[in-house]
Image (cartoon, rainbow over all chains, first blue to last red; front, side):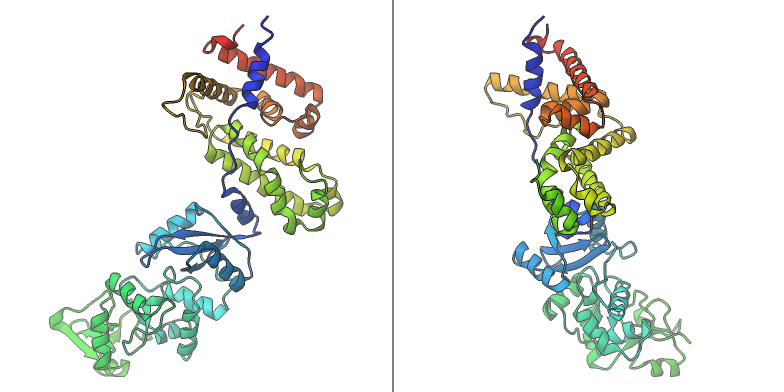
Length: 261
Length: 187
């Protein structure tokens, strides 16, 4: 019998490298138990951003100079503990990637529990605006059943806790003016340009009072950025819904520039 | 070992003190999980699941029961169960002796005696992965985490005598498995 054998195995076991728990372990546990939200850094069309999420979905997107600055602002705004992770929950990361790539049909879950019912309705409606298109504030107001609340829609979008992912930058003034944005009008313009929304044409229309375009073959009128664009030779311009209807045009069922009648 | 009053603090305010429990015990729980499954990704999942289950259990306990808990064995019991249940659902890694993902990457130009020792530690970690669960758990708890037989008995909810003989049998199996490859450890 070799009496040295067993201690060698035992010593070998106790000498095995002791891996340290990864830094994401505690945040992940606190997240899954609902004790804290998570935040992480992500790439976006406007550069690095911070994204935060609860177990119910994404709660916030913001720019910040440092992680601490983001977390401090987050705790103050939402009255929730938040922890930084290197690696975000995979499902949310994939959803964000798809959304930023222009796929709005399988969005990641959003947690809008910090918003009012009205604000949440506005934000969810904004999610329906496709990349490359814009809608006026009044469109959102009408679509959510509060046609007179355009101003409140503006406030709700100004307070959008999840800009970029909930594309409040795709909501503009009815007169074609780009309007305000959480990150500034210039960034709103460059985002829309990058998404290939025809902003120049929209603004030019706005200045001459044109609100809708239509086709004299289909007799359908649309918002100027609707994906169904009449051919140049059939293009008609309207200054109001009343004018379009008076000329025998009906609203497009896709961009819904007016209530179908 | 957790501070003696942590159980009492958890009993008084679970949400306010749960993070302290995680910070206190994530080291041994993760180390157990890592040696159980042999890779960082599964180890992190096991550790996460164990603490989440612990939290949900604590939510259902009254404060007297929480205050009376011996936290370390209690949490390791949950971790062992989580790890075992995963193994049932998941295919074990094949070729354990070679495929162990060690946290320290082997340096190419290190002295021979160090690389030999690392090779031995890789083989040992690999052999550990191939131990049947009933031996693997007590061997890790005893010789990797350094728990007493009484604590292991409590963790595994087995008599201390059973634990002792399982640890002994586990060590024997490890020796047999390594003896062919590493003459220094053979009879």
